[in-house]
Image 1: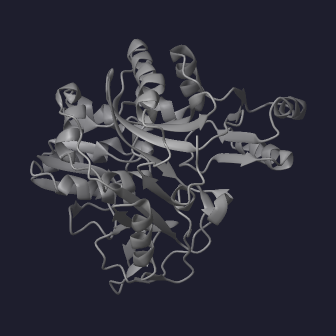
Image 2: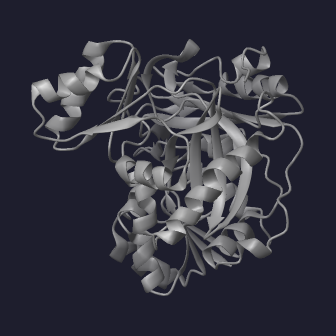
Length: 421
């Protein structure tokens, strides 16, 4: 099988590794890729992921049997639709279905119709007066959750007990001409559950937990994710099945009923409170960085699995097989991330096969340099979550990148037994 992967981050690097291990894979290509992917695939730089014509032209040139779309931007832009119209098998939902991430208002409407628990929400639209904004904010709190209604790469959410900070984010989003969503705060530990979805067929992967805040102890602003681990030792034995039965299956059925049947990876971001799982958000693709941990434990051949979703045969697949133990990923971020990151700094100490590239490139001298905010992901696996942590942090300690930073407490609350339901 000749496979073209669209994307350039550590999530895509993890997908490439999984696809490369499948005996069914005969050729791997990635566009635009990054500096760490060349040993696994042919890299095609310069391709814009949301440019459907360029992606189709490349897929035709490569005679690709399967196109796997990693990031959300091309999915929301309809690149999967254009590829399917051109005759390609595609892993990733069409534009209508991708609204589950692209429009939080749409997602709320789907959940309401499907009877899925989620936070109470209220939209504020551009043109709202100061009185309108104050009145809406007054209906929420004492912890405010303020979300951009559209795509925000995991960074468009402000969760704060500070009313002034909440109002400032509302104003920033509205000033850009976009609606903003206020939500009631969902308490309880968070779970990221990925499900392969083919119409009404839903197959869950291992549950994971992301660490969104930039600093230890969940301090500082939200980021695209600073680390993750899987599975979750504190989740009840029936936890995954409850999320599937109470959230993912009802949503999949509702999407079919609406004529926008889902095909691809549905990411359910869950808060587990007193009443069980409630939805924080949906994403229309593999999450980053949770994918890096989850796929490190997957034994089922990945290429055939993704192709079964793309060709509508997921229901015929045997149960997934998983490696015993735990996996953890730690993100190494550039100086000043999640603000405007400094790029072009030389990186050394990246020889370990447990390192995935995210924001990397080569300079004129051929040196590996930083080229984004989240630069590298380090993977650790082990029989216990504690040993997985030790292995990951032993590796990241050997990487040199001036001004870089990373969290030192990924999965630590779980290891210390400080998470419970």
